[in-house]
Image (cartoon, rainbow, N blue to C red; front, side, top):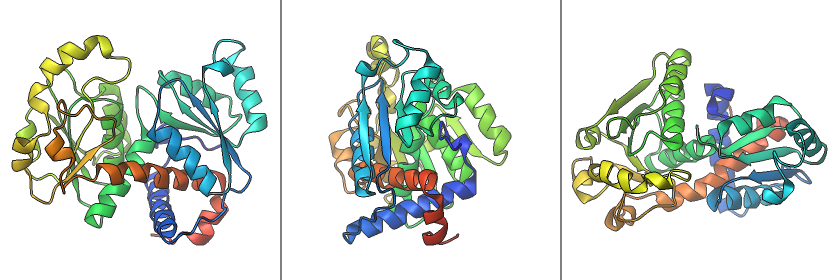
Length: 313
């Protein structure tokens, strides 16, 4: 059974197929084409955390593909009213896939361990694979290709940056994390990347200005993620020199694109003049969440359609 807990669950060729499918579906939708590829299929959105983009993009995406969705919040009693095995196996009787947005990555891993239904990671504390699919789709859309591009993430070595590091390694792209000392990516995560992709071009630095000098895309995220609220004041001090602002952008090529996974705390990690600039692809990036996730759903649930309709690389 195919799960997507992280991008370690697929190989590079499968990733490229999903990205090509995403571009095809996006271009088709722009022409008014909404093929019922997943007609009458149902996905469940099992969420422990608040969501705008993940929830709405999956709900809208499956509807455009001819299927439907169910939002499952706290009332379903995940991990509270019955055993994890019973809960997951029952879900597998009803739905075709589950999108899980969990506080702990272990929770998503446990769901997948029963192999009752395909599990898609809609965000955990470890990684955010659906976001990184949209990020690369956005870079390709904005720059014409993702090949040989350099992505610079300015901020925390969090779940978003970790997924970006992995997807860049898979696609032979350069990835740089510019962060304060002690806010680097998880060492075990990097070890896994290097073991599977020994030619990975991943750098971590404490110098954001030097990092962006040859950047093709400059990416940032909130300094304080969900669950870290008690650290907010300290993080504002630590990350003060890692703001994406006009001064930092002046050190980057004029062709560099600006990315942010949203929601943004304007005036903290990024300034209004940058996020609203002509270099910003932030809204397009949010839109690509739906296209990338549609492609992922089609690839997972109707592989025959992909094999027939999506050109090989």
